[in-house]
Amino acid sequence: MTNLEEILALAADRALSDGELARLNEVNVGLDRALGLRYTIIEPGRVVAELHVASRHLQPAGLVNGGVYASLAESTASLAGMVAARGGVVVGVNNNTDFISSVRSGVITAEATPIQLGGRTQIWQILCTHRGDLVSRTTLRTMIL
Image (cartoon, rainbow, N blue to C red; front, side, top):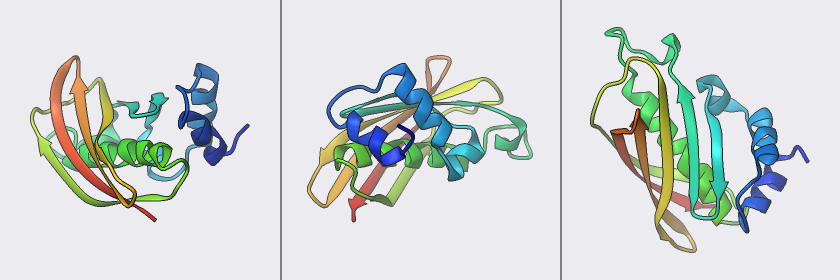
């Protein structure tokens, strides 16, 4: 199984295994791949991803660019939304990200959980942490196409 849709269909009913997560991370494309995002947990109602901070994620002052946090949130919750929509196409329609603390290096973990799951729209909370401390909080509204 290598197809993203097939892998996500499994996650609608149960947590993905380590092997399934590895396959998903291998076939992941686009911005997730460009950022170096790695999914570590995908299960109904929860998606967790990690980002190992590299120089490409930093703004000129040497801190992780705010757009990285917004992108982590959008990617993580959109994937969670696809799982919740049982493979339906989900797009972000509003991303409100609060930057709480700065990061220069290390690993940022993003965790998306639902606030509301409707038939046409969803609202997700995404918490990004670094060494256990909250560094950003996002509320993302998605629409199921």
